[in-house]
Image (cartoon, rainbow, N blue to C red; front, side, top):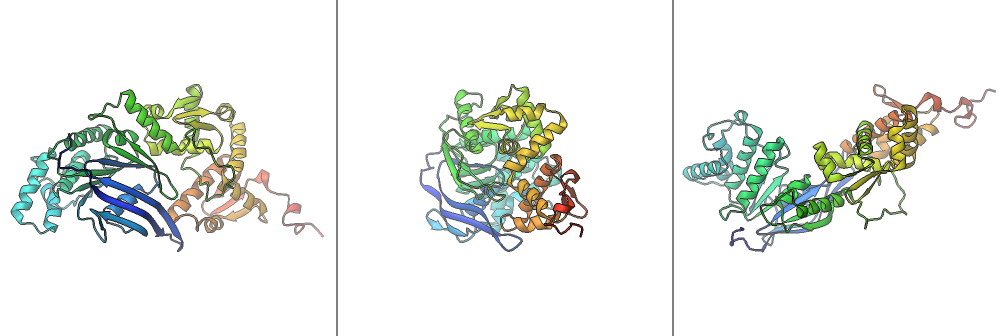
Length: 449
């Protein structure tokens, strides 16, 4: 039961927050837009979203580690102008100092606060004992397993007795059994009156993790990150992941993440461009594997069940789903994925026919692939430097996302034999069979006189 000292008073208020970063070419890359949220005492809030949704950036603005571009973050009613004095963070990467012992790592925040040596020692030893590492006080991080390192990260946060514990995918770097164990331990200690913090905000891409831990789940969309759905979790603790009510919440969140609920018809009046419709982060081979699995399941599968069977996380599965729907091979309703007749034909056709199907769909429905093919077709010799396409994309994407988009387009285009790519020269060229006749290039410039 939550400690009666934990009230429902707001700890954190985020109002009208946006966050932008300068791209390498001097343009602006928008990460977060129009974020409004409140974190109250006595609750666990999960920020759930795909990679690129800005959830970690949002967590860091709440921590006061980065400032919003516009809008405001308030802690107990006061605007933040630096590090949040009531928050402590647990990171995915453990973030331990390798030259310090376990005890010294845990004492870091206390010593930075100027507390006496004896108090630093006593509080650190108590925190180490509370997370089950008694006896490892003098060990160095290199001597610890991943789970033990993350326990040190928890102790370092708990020892400060913060109002708000911020956790950035704290279990994602651990093996399945270790992460499950630590997840359950966190849920157990949170329910104890002696838990040294009033609220928790956790970033995750694992839906079941969010449902196991959170009282509310905020689902972030992408490009830029916005809160698209808030789902309250009213299930009693401890939560049974095998119960029908648990599965129902998981399914609701899956539907929100896929963005294809029955109440969300796709817009028909928007012209798709390489900017508005970026390529999903999915290789042709990965997409082919997913389509084959669905075909083996009689053309239909429940996404939560499929992810569990394949040991996929949501960030692994959803880009493949997005690629399949973009190309018309899949349709998604709620949490159900279905192969379309074209998807069945693609996965059962011979190699050449499957390439032809993919080429036709990529040209029609993958804007960047179509843009590349049309540009090559309008060049003098059917070839262009990859830098040409970088220049076209650089105002819309950060450098890393630009390179990823170009890599994906090249993968899709080469598979479907729409164009070739020479990685040494950086030249893209229409495949030889598709090159225009010399007499037809650039008007009649090549016509003999």
